[in-house]
Image (cartoon, rainbow, N blue to C red; front, side, top):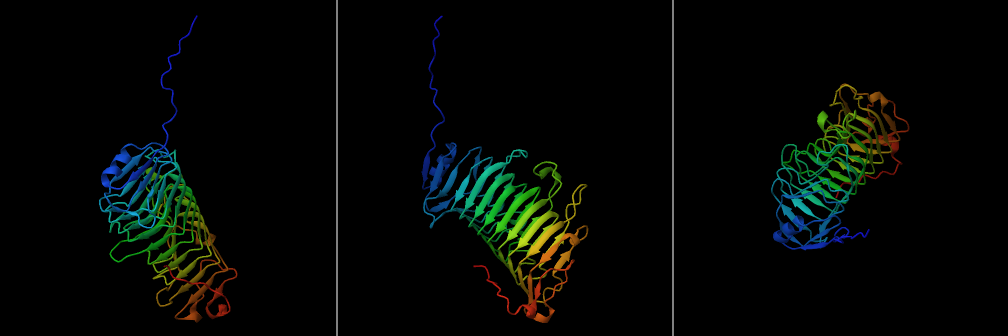
Length: 360
């Protein structure tokens, strides 16, 4: 028996394309025709907000000229990416949104995180200005890197991680502005795990410049059923100047705060809080605070640590930190919930080399 094979076009995937964009019309056309692996290069100029991309893998959207980035002004959101693994956003400018500046999510598929996203050299400003509106919002992302970005003036969070894992924020600058509510800077909650924030600079970055933990509705945890707001959070080698405190540990189950420089907090140096009190959630606990420099005004900082109810401050560990009340060096010794090992206080550390630069 003879067999006839109908040879239709058995082509493989369509090759990725590079889209050169220089106007709102060409941007809109490029976004309508995207395929996996495409690159969108955007020329300098002003562009409309409200750009939505869903289900495109390995997409790159970047400035044609990194020194003169495209500018996405106003509207509710500048960009929203849903289920876009392998996404790269590079050298964009976003400003003046009433909702979130940039929003990335898993499309509600909470057991299937979006992986390998890079946000680099992006500038986001003037978001909100009031209420729970974020400069960069990330929900359900793993292996996410946010590098060398600048964020100034926001409503809720500068960066909001909800159920993100194995991710890094590095080399970013966060600057608060008058007239913006700025509840927290970067925040890690809703089942976040294995997050590092390092080598960043903060200047007057709100009530809680960094928040390890938080308060999340039970339906939004990733993975579903997680019994921790955040765990294994590392805050290292940052400079934090101003703000109500340096960092709030809020229902976190394990964190490290190491090698940071904290200068001129307005009221406290740390807050230890428990906002999620559902069954099975442990108290805020197991935080190591080591090798940091704290320079403050005793006239402002009456208590170094604000300890809320239902927390476990006795599980914290303090080691080798330097504490200096600039206006009253003899009163530099902090009141801590446990005895510190190897700390130095005020004039006792006069021979110690200390680095206390302010943010750019």
